[in-house]
Amino acid sequence: MYLFEWFDQIDKIAFTFIHRDMSARWLDAIMLLMRNQYTWIPLYVFMLIWTLRLERSTGLKFICLTILCFAITDYTSSGMLKLHFERLRPCYDEDLTTVVRGIIGCGGKYSFPSSHAANHFGLATFWFLTITHITRQKWYWLWLWAFLIGLAQVYVGKHFPFDIVAGASLGIITGLTMYKLFDAWSKRDYDRNSKNNVILQQEALGI
Image 1 (spheres, rainbow, N blue to C red):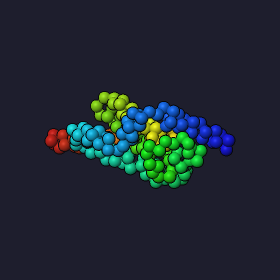
Image 2 (image 1 turned 120 degrees about the vertical axis):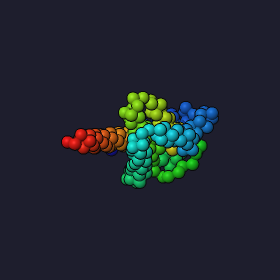
Image 3 (image 1 turned 90 degrees about the vertical axis):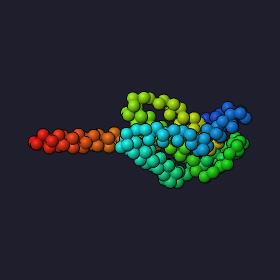
């Protein structure tokens, strides 16, 4: 029990540093913008346009697994783990009543793990690995995108740092799993198409 209490204190110290000690009025506006879902609509439109330029079956796989990745991370974090662990958000924690600045509403009562971190790290992981697989291009900025959203959640007072770490871990595992499904799905389709092509060639040759 002592270990958990010590860890909780370290987490609260880190939260206090990020939320209060490194705060600035100009940074408040940026961080509120970073964690706002509507800020990233242009990015999602860009990703949709990029996907539509792929070969049709590849694009369909990419869209389906993107949706599945988001659904899994969101439901697992919000619908299961938060209700299981019941860790109070910083704004509900009595130890932090003089620390939380109240620049945004509290929202839901529980914070562990962060759904924002889980969702965005899940997408970042799946997109990064899959895009690298398809194009050999490494979009490292996806990791920065997910990290900044996670940092913003702590900065505005919505989450403790460990909430972000746990959410990011869930997201990375889910994103990696979705990439493995994409790879297996693509290989199965490739093998099936290759087999069909062989059969067609044999029929054309009268074999």
